[in-house]
Length: 455
Image (tube, rainbow, N blue to C red; front, side, top):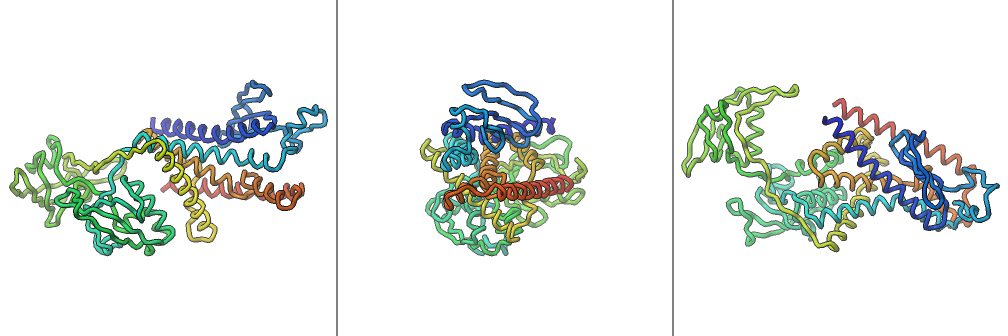
């Protein structure tokens, strides 16, 4: 069932992105007066088609689902000698260079517009997310050296307000890539509650992060983690170690084996690595401290062994719903799309100069896996995934590689500068080189996918 869900989520996401991209080309081509012969979702052999519309355009589904195309009336691909004068006016190469640029650029632009629309809708609807409140900060980390200790609520990063954890993380990632210090506006907490009177500004240095740190969980390297609820025990399951030890629902765990337990996640993590070991627990019940011993059972699941005491521990962090008026949401959608595009280009540039590993290139297997994961989490996560992939598709298609939209735009830009089209022979050689580059990138992506799958 999980595999089927992943496959469906991947096909739906890919289908939406392909259709939107190709519709961009189709609509602008029609607007510019170019005759469209075929609109295909997929590549290769056509498995289903139907003709309709004023030009009897062939709408097709092809065998290979990784892509699509819009086939226009083009003298480079068809014999146009027998066409009427009216049809010749609608041939692609007879259009002005500016119309050709508009038609080619419309595909990537449609992907950016889709991402903006998705982000705007999500921001306007409201996204339930954790607040940017910090967990206890480990010593010897950049966050600790900056003065953070845990419990602080981050309200702004470099003057830009943040209300949810993902926005804070996104802004810190952008600054970390540029190695720019982060100025954090914070509210400290008193007894676990934000105190608006205890506000301050701290500077978090980010230049100590390596490239490999940025490719993993860079926040953990900084000592920044999401705050979790206190270790208050929930339902005690019958016949388990917790019940045998006399633990009760509502008990607050203070210490385990002499070490303070700051939150429920710390307690769960300790239990999981302590199967068969005695844990001396000090807790509080009805304002009185108590002590007991518990020995976690050894449990093996999916080939992994861990400890369990059979008690529910709340781990859901403090949540909020970030919602904006429509115009503000649209502005945030535009900014998020722009920032993501710039970040993607920066990472690609660093790959070219060797600062970022080529292992970060992902292919269809990894994308399908993420599609399935986000679909299982919920609609908001799935739509956010589609928006990010749409941005990536738009950016990749604008790269100046022959056979991509960006390569064609480069040709037309040269035509504007020189006043004449590029030589046909040069175009053929560049086309072959572009195919070689794309095949190489695809091979790297599939190899990386297989390595991830095996590991």
